[in-house]
Image (cartoon, rainbow, N blue to C red; front, side, top):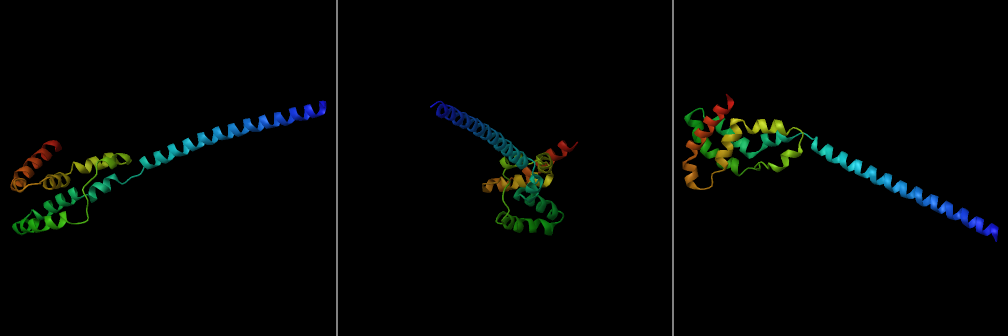
Length: 151
């Protein structure tokens, strides 16, 4: 009976050792999973592309179109026709919330200070016909603000 008790103690000790090893393995696995998740989040934040998103935005495209075609009278007539086409294009307005997840968000902020982006934003913020009448003055004030910020 003594040997059976001794064998039972050995089996119990082996079971306890196995349980301790399993708990340690699970704790290590949890630590590694946390490290991997943190690394994934860090990699997401290190992606570049915010600057390109701003350059591809409808605001920048409209402003760029305005600046390119504002050199002569024919260009001004082209602007009226082309703005409607640009607004209906597949370019989308810029989503500011998503830009903070990119590594190059500072570069994107620089592009957003470009005159093209600022003028496009003025035009796209027009909602009523009265706003469209006031566009030249709004654009002029935005141009003056741009010149003052550049100094």
